[in-house]
Length: 142
Ligand SMILES: [Zn+2]
Picture 1 (cartoon, helix red, strand yellow):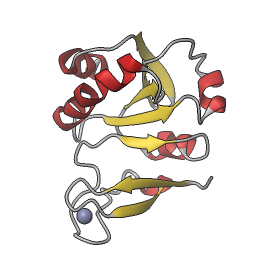
Picture 2 (cartoon, rainbow, N blue to C red; picture 1 turned 135 degrees about the vertical axis):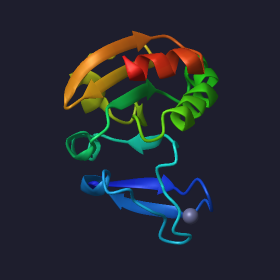
Picture 3 (spheres, rainbow, N blue to C red; picture 1 turned 45 degrees about the vertical axis):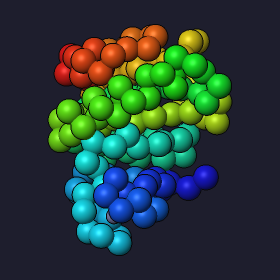
Picture 4 (cartoon, rainbow, N blue to C red; picture 1 turned 60 degrees about the horizontal axis):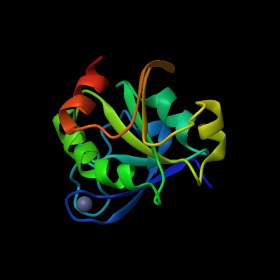
């Protein structure tokens, strides 16, 4: 794994490789030039997570999830909707807990979905269980 974020442009769907340390520089799509952070959750991993936390000027709301988890899949549209509401105020990211055992262990994730809010490198809030978009927004703003 590398210290880059693989992300799909929310406008043209082009795959972009985004250097994690440039996350605060309003990154734009290499193909269409539109903003890559238009509220679309970013998929982070053990390799690039800390770089994003360090570089981000916004608080992060992390969704620990896994593909086999029904409530996680159920919450995914609400998480995306909350991301659009929170664009510019909080960075919504997803971490696949199966693929990223280091992050899961560090945050002591015992059930999923679990949402963790991180502000300036510190955990400031946490909530387990699927939430509606309004509750996700409230947690990010806490
Ligand atoms: Zn694009």
